[in-house]
Length: 459
Image (cartoon, rainbow, N blue to C red; front, top):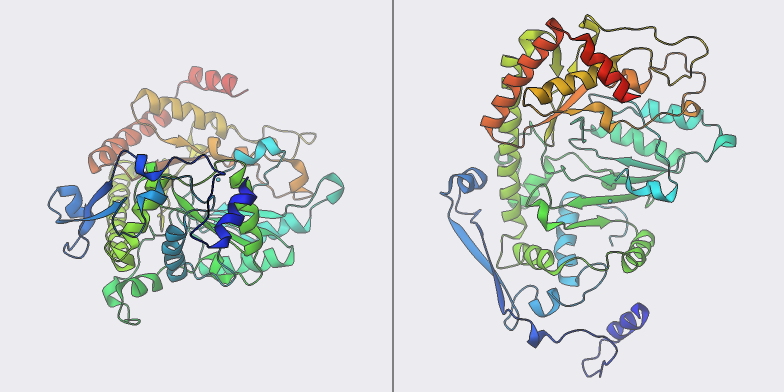
């Protein structure tokens, strides 16, 4: 059926008596227009702040069923193309070329592949993201008699969730060269790409062809896609973090080969993207909408808003948590999260040397994971919710480790909590006050019974 529909569409003829598809006629759709009232990004000085305050001037753009617009509701709410409607694809193509710079033909995460028997191999990270040398070490020392060498790299390069780390251009280049050497595909999942921090103001960047959007694009870190000369990068972008999560609309940029495969999978799965999201995006980027310049003014204001929230959380951390001496925090260069390290080695119940010579290379040497979970429960009791790093970790396999005597098991490295600065300042301040007090109580008034309870639960 799909093949026949594609053939009909390819004919390009208007006078075709198509009696094949059970598609309701557009005249029976019970609506004639959608009106999107949005911030006027050209009239506002700081559209995000003014929008939140209720003082922002607005503008409207429309999607019509029977009048001219960028994407007719006749098409947007019909059974549509599995790769998305052409009008929406074209709008995203312009955005992709401006920011992401694909060098090859244009055309979801860790739990999803498990049912297919796909296994994950974790790569060590530091404050700058995954460490290229650790990645190469795994590939170099892989024992293929015990399984196929990894052949796909999955990364979140900006504001990585949960650590908040951002890969520098130098690391991206190293990672790409390693991918070439070992013939890896790269899944570049980058929902926080436009939420990069500590960048120079757009106004200070030399003008490029006089457009705001081109100047804005120039101060963002180049993507892995922009480095790709082999067609090995599949890049995943989303509007969830920059417009609204409920839109559930994103796009994939890949070589033609992967584009065709992805379309086939879509035919057998989710079918096509939903009409509302495509209609909104197409109108927003169209001639009567924000266009790319307007979107970039929104993104710049949004980026600064999240940067202010990050700075406020860091200020509250320095005031409420830092003086305890029991935790420190990394300063994220993008995204929505901070990664807080707890110094469990200072806890009176901290223990090391817990394994003997016969233990597995991935067996924990300390009780850090037990302390982490006990502290998490203490936080919950004190009405502050932060995410323990153990829920994000990928179980290790001794096969990855080889003869590395210096390896520190991941269960000894789960000494972090993830906190978000996406909420209100009131919530952030309340959270840091409570986290600081909880840390102080946990370290200075430890309860052995709690540790035993968590250790049993962990088993």
